[in-house]
Amino acid sequence: MRILPVLIVTASLFAGCQKSVFQSLKKTDDLFVYEGLPHPLREFASFEKEKKREDVTQIAGQWFYDAKVKATGDARDRLMNLLFEESGFSVPNPNVPPKDCGSFHPDYAIAWKSDGEENYLMICYTCGEAKLIREGKTTTYDLGVYKDWQKVLSEFQSNRPK
Image (cartoon, rainbow, N blue to C red; front, side):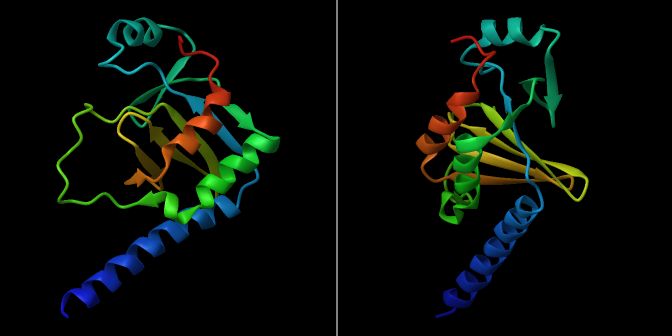
């Protein structure tokens, strides 16, 4: 019986955290997508070559091609649907051992401005995680069905070697 109050408090904290993320999205019309460089471990040679390009940048220590692409039309609508799908994000279970895919490496970052501040949701297909960077804080989530993310975000691949 003692576990029930703990579960309720934990659920309400998580719901509040997600709610604030979604609130910041409601304050913007523009979504942008950054394409990540190749994986620094699995595609080491390609990553090192791409990192030397003039048109790359770092966001919160992660490497991206610096051309951010505005999400418009159907792609924007599908991204917003995924972002507002609360069941698509969950707090990682602290009792599960860390994934063996190396350090977090985002394949894409979705960016939007809210209250004058840039927010980023970085998505890694390899580990199925997302990191929200907002107001100087980073929150990690497990992605529900990340194949939906792959389908939408693949439309933004233009620089990364295939």
